[in-house]
Length: 596
Image (cartoon, rainbow, N blue to C red; front, side):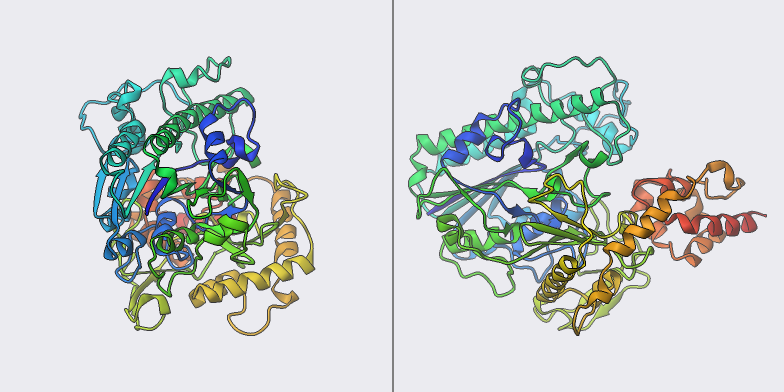
């Protein structure tokens, strides 16, 4: 038996023809794929975003309740590694740049062999001391990744040069070399259609439209501030890159045809998450709730044992099911710590595997869905605490934990969590962005409101969904701090006293009625709420003021590196609410006193 997984990053199911995507999207090979496989209509990702999703793909368990972005842990079960231990040859080809960043460096090594292709996004690939030539652009966040991406683009002048193309070339080379052999698993994984939405002109020409504005193929993760024409332009740029993905998917399907692989080879085509392209008034992901466009993902499976094709499945499935599915296909017993379930019978006859599913981002909403209703549970208090990272691999997306982050760390005893296999685990204060109270707790009915534009006020339904949420938190061995942060009982019954939707709706309405914060209302000086946080962090007195207000994590975590130029005022007035606006006057007063 053989298996191929084709994994795209940021693949929005609402753009795909098999899911009723717009007729102007050119993706004929996704249609062809659906005709040769089973299409899952109710697949949800779990832990967000990129590497947390890949930890789930390896381990078959949720990541986001215990920690944020990071590598595989010493106690983690890895599906590719388990396959290799049982005689299955595993090979990865990918251009996803975060595999070789600090927070992802243990994943690709679980495969027997791997090829890493360079050049996507801000991948630190080609070294140029001189500044690259960058056109006028609407993007506002222009850090090192922005600069490096323009260096990289200078080497990607043809489709043959593109990392996506090279990734599929490498995958097809593996198939060509090994199609006659048995017992292998190939993962072909491309970063596309992740932003920036950069591809060659012949794909852009599939989407002719009038646009003569500034360069714009990489939106910031923020509220939409652009014109309708600019929003439309980005959607077409995304679609152009999606069409390139479709072409390379077709190359894999052609190889399946050419080598007769449909007889004995499982094919899984999937993604980690989607992307907001102006829906809900937002760009991107992470800083807003995980709306359907970002978390309800496409999934296609061809299983040669059942031979089912051109059919849809309605059962609720998740990313945590992929590892058990692959292990079962190769006759390998899934470890007891895996929470997912093999989708063999679901693909064959729509046998359900769960009543409800969790999803979310570390420190963000904790969400539950039963496939129809979605409940987004926000933190119970504006400070979004307590929140802790639980890890033995203290690294963020592109950096190690700082000594300051580890200053208050403690080693929890072995047996704290069942899935750590009696290993102790390090607990340290976690950075929570965004502040989920900015959006509050939300409840939606996807059958009557698929666009999630009309949140429900339904106490009975919220109570049922909250009870499902608590059951799943216990099943996932969630840390006690998550129950406290969410205002949920860690033991005993869930009652009407634990509901939040109405209370949050009232509080958000009251906050919206307040006059907007004005920069002129806050004092300026050597140090103030207008001073960049990078500067405040270097001042011992300012540092103490911030810590006295419970915001020391702004200086201790990766935010300082990512947004050193942002001020407290900017963070308080941003749509994500990184700093609670109610704290700003008191912080301003204390900083003014220090400055005086």
